[in-house]
Image 1 (tube, rainbow, N blue to C red):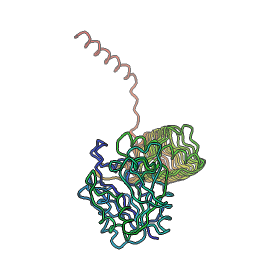
Image 2: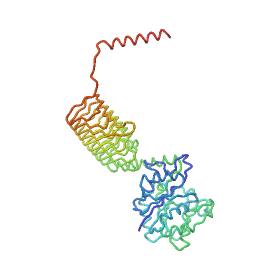
Image 3: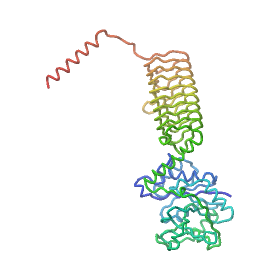
Image 4: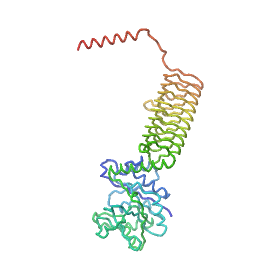
Length: 451
């Protein structure tokens, strides 16, 4: 049965106290709405519709960065959740199968829950609603059951005392027959305390038209919605705890797990070692047996097997470390390929470069890649030795097995096997240092007398 996703992401999120649309606030390095899309990916949906409203252009741009095939539907007026789902009508005009309705501010819905809802739809139910039994039902909407079937959903503020005594609550996520969903929405009115078109009323409309509805229960933790900064912080803590537990279960060693922060797409191989206070931003893969030493920051990079990075290293986007590489303390790598067994040991910057296998870059090496307008490439050959404090002014090539003398400024290509020296000849002036010190001390003493 075909699946389609409708992710509601139109709310303003005023309680976030932010100019940024709520669904763009990051969780695990990805905007909130991306987590709902990721949950639904297990369904292999044919269509993914993101319903945007407040800050729609910014949300649209963020969605395009994730996948340009995501369909955007605009909710101009916020008239309730049923109205929001109705905005996806054009995108799903001829759809069949199941339309899943998810929320851009509810990031912890498990793919397994959606798969169980899909199974319930396959049994012939027109509407499948997620439900849970919280420790404190509070102001959640209640699921009214009769003879084992879902009869209706009632919002707390519209519920009677008997209905408020029900402990089975509405989890929000729905799976609805895609061929019926918009006809059912057309039957929803706004005769309620808020004057809005509630998606929850779709159950009553479906039942009135002779269709069946049921409930799939899930854990309360999956219902966590983000409405405030405090809730976002709690969600981040939950996300990180799960990511750390998964890493440990998969054979990663972490000496201080609570100090390591993962992104939503971090991949770390077994037998890797992550030391304290390491941060993984988006787009990082670390292969088996690698070691990431303390206080390192990685984003958009790949670390090969048995490589050692840090401490205090920064790997930026496009850093590609091959196997057995060594990236030392206070080294920054950006948009550069470091070959097998190469070493960039300390206090160096390598950007827009290719470093050959077994090359060795001494302390303070800098690839001078930017001329103020354009970026230029540096090519360092296999087994080359770059002396400490060498400035490589790109575009430039240092050949295989070549060397540069410490303190050199290299502005021209160095042939294979050659030694390049690019520094002024040292001149010694006997006795000049002592005379200069005496003169400066005398000037300082005269200034004190003038005061």
